[in-house]
Amino acid sequence: MKKFPGSKGLVFNEDLLINQSSKGLSGISMPSNNLSGAHISKTAKDYIDAKFLRNEKSSPLLLPEVSESTAVRHFTRLSSWNICVDTAFYPLGSCTMKYNPKINETIASLNNIRNLHPMLPAGYIQPILKIIYEFNRLLCGLTGLDEFTFNPQAGAAGEFTGMKIIKKYFEVKNEKRNIVLIPDSSHGTNPASSYIAGFTPVEIKTFFADKPADIKNKSKGYIDINELKKYINKDVAAIMITNPNTFGLFEKNIREAAELMHKNGSLVYMDGANFNAFIGNCRVSDFGVDILHLNLHKTFSTPHGGGGPGSGPVGVKDFLKEFLPVPYISADRQAANKKQAANDEQGYYYELKNKREYSIGRISSFYGNFAVILRAYSYLLSLGRQNISKISEIAILNANYMKKKLKDTFIESDPFPEELCMHECVLNDNVFQSEGISTLDFAKSIIDYGFHPPTIYFPKNIHGAIMIEPTETESIKTMDSFIDAMKEIKKKGNKYGSKSPKNTKTGRVNEVLANKNPIFK
Ligand SMILES: *Cc1c(COP(=O)(O)O)cnc(C)c1O
Image (cartoon, rainbow, N blue to C red; front, side, top):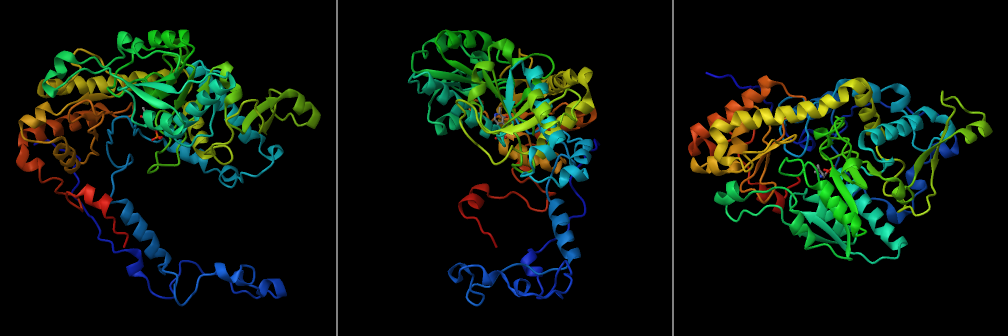
């Protein structure tokens, strides 16, 4: 019998912390207050207007009172109920759940970094500003763009920032353009971000299958240039292209699409969240991109951390620099002379600047998530110049390895059987359906084998989609084990699938109910 990691084991039960509370218990012992003086004997009540104070009797504070060991065990046990990149293979498509190197954590927890305060004046934090400045230069080198901002704290926030920049750009040019073209191969956040920034998103079809059965014959998956031409007019501000797209394919028509847009006076935005598919091997400026976001919490190995904190830096071509958000970091030799503070080998003095001619303003507090930027910088430096291109080479190799290995059993599920994929491969549910297994059943079943499920039901235009991204940090052994599990689930059929997961602490939950009727206690 094949051996899978599996998920049977010691699972502790854990009551709510509030139910473990005993009055008077505490995790810390404060020293007794033996100071004297009028201002010390005062409490918060003496300073805050009575109308803002909580009434101790009518609304007592419902905080658990527990010992330190109870608190530590509680949160450690809770953390063991979940799957994470440090415990299991996590092939969540379009998310790049790759391994987070521990060297990044070591660097980020250095004493003089951990204790930084964001309000420290520039003179005290020259090395910190220098790290951000140099990382900016590295990203410019890798993308061919001219400047990045690190203010956006997620990929979607980067998209929003990019759209605001495009909006402002046309305002300054005094052109009224309100449409952003978005191929249906784009990430779901693209139409949302453009809409919130005040544009009207217009969908361009790349995928012409009517029924799942037609997919094999009719699939395209790329921007159809003739189709695109129908939508180009003077109202179009930009096109937003996800590349690699959500079918896991390299958008091979991006340059031609970009030329058409530029001829029309429109801009080209690229969603580069999954830059691990090309980093070190091609530069987006070479395919006509004016503005781009990257996800440090994907390509650059920083943790996703349950939805944050992340970082979605936005890079632009020269002509858009003055539109970037503030603050930004300047490196100046003259300032260094004036302040006699050139402690930098290049003679630079680094400063946070708040003025840019057409800046869209602030989009986050301070300067984004510095600890995330630092981890990403550490990742690049620890790889070194000669290894960076291996990120994308192995990401693509791994995804194609899985695609190829799944072919014998799942060929009928591959919408793009003739194509090489990029960092991820996408299947539809044809094969599982023939065994009476839904995509959801499959996703729940694979948990019992000790794996996190792939992304499911996205992209929407692939019927019952299963999107697998092994990432560049997984071994052949792990991928083989996952492939065997997929095949075994198919073999076991509906009876197993519809009842899974069986080995987890909690079985199949009604996810809709939990959303509609959340119970917080
Ligand atoms: C993940 C992802 C996003 C959104 O990034 P967040 O950090 O989750 O906001 C956008 N586009 C693509 C292609 C992605 O994979």
